[in-house]
Length: 138
Image (tube, one colour):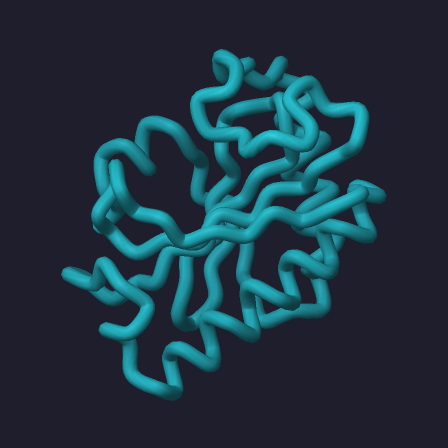
């Protein structure tokens, strides 16, 4: 079960055997979030060693694919969890020309909703980029 804030702010677009892959609804940046399916986990160290390796592998594979697909200048990866206690890892494509570069994205500017066509295109680009990974579409 996803935290209510993740449910409100994101769309589930795919899943692996271990994680949900969410798209943050903020169109200011290509921003996905990996959320382990295990319940009542808030810290990386609470995962088994094998699950830590799997999460790390999936984070790195998704980040590499998105960097290439979006031609990002930098990938921001973070598992903070101060507001949403459920363990989740943000993977954000950043650009030297984005509106808050080089500052962190949290609270920098108001979230911009996706237009319907832009949302569809972004989801398809992400799913195409990770097509060779072990994720199934939602």
